[in-house]
Amino acid sequence: MEYIRPQNLKEALRVMKKRGGRTILIAGGTNVIPDMRGKTIKPQVLLDISHLKNLSYVKEEKKRIRIGSLTTISELVSSKVIQNFASILSEAANQLGNPLVRSRATIGGNLADASPAADTAVPLLVLDASIVTERDGEKRREIPIDQFFVGPNQTVLKPDEIIKEIFFPKPDPKSKIAYIKLGLRNAMAISVVSVALLMEMEREECKEVRIGLGAVAPKPMRAYGVEEVLTGKKINGKLIQSCCEEVEKEVQPITDIRASAEYRRSMTSVLLRRLIQQITT
Amino acid sequence: MKKPKTYSLEINVNGEWKRAEVTPEETLLHVLREKLAHTEVKEGCGKGDCGACALLLNGKAVNACLTLAMQAHRQKVVTLKGIGAPERAHPLQESFLRHGAIQCGFCTAGMIVSAKALLDENPQPTRREIREAISGNLCRCTGYKKIFDAIEDAAKRLR
Image 1 (cartoon, helix red, strand yellow):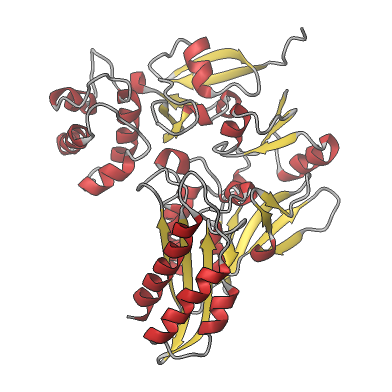
Image 2 (cartoon, one colour):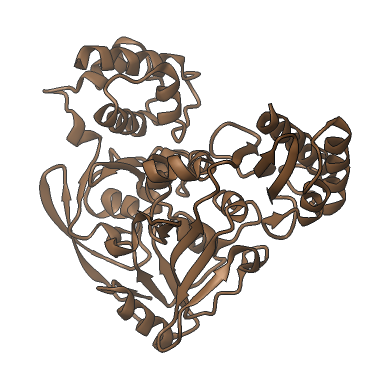
């Protein structure tokens, strides 16, 4: 095995292109190292990008927020910009793993690992984020996050592609956001169900809504069906009930060591109800 | 058998520069324990679930088992022994002893590291903040209460 520490992103991209298949990127290492230990990945080359400081940033622009892919999860938690404009992202980040993991894990790594329960993915779905990637000799891509994941631990990333940045438009200041993660314990918990909600109300009517769900499908998902039920309608008990029924139909949870499919389905609707009530009171 | 490719690691441990030959996949935990005789860094699970191996890398508390040794090349690492020693114990260590927060002692090194990282950033933590700060450190013996008390007390004494 070889260890390579590139000086910059360009060099990293060249190595990825040249060395191909069994070159594994490592940044925080919080997934890569356990995977190597568990033999689910067998790299020939470990390409260490953890020192590329210029890929770690949170920038506020006039209309959007840009986050470098190597920004750590703890940096997301403490960023004033993110707390201000996208508090559900720092809330979700603060529930990822534990403080020791959060100081190393990166937002790019969390997305590239693509767990269906990925903690940063669910808020980013609701924030309508895009993922910027680069490849040596190719044009950069801007991939809308709801097209980024294709299955459990599977993304549209090519073998020599690196995530450079994640950006999202600043949410309308009139919109309200909320997030909740259900796990089997208060820390170091992989989500059983996680829900993010963005809603803009006009008087009692729902003008715009986005719902993100984690751990209830092969990938983090938007509940487009429920969004349709809600949009343009007056929020009342009957509508919330319809939403809960609709979301139970829309999710595709599995039974695994953490929870049964039935429990996940049921909890999605419970948590969605809670968030809608939280936002509308 | 082909000899694996090794790299010359230079690392500052508790103020001293040290060297070792390491392979790419070797973790910081393994190298510190097996090659640099820093056995005060404990291996509990080896995969980031228990926090026994916590140490400070450039001032931030991290799991040594989730860091490649080469990622710490030319970086500064502080282990329990860099926080305090028998001749000059850190108030955290004294407080752990005073409160009976050490039973088998295996989680202690990691606990002290996480507590130090907390107090460095937040000298007046609430009880809740203490709980969250050590949420990555498992203890099978004490039930945690004495550990929270010890950290709370040390924070007061350090002020």
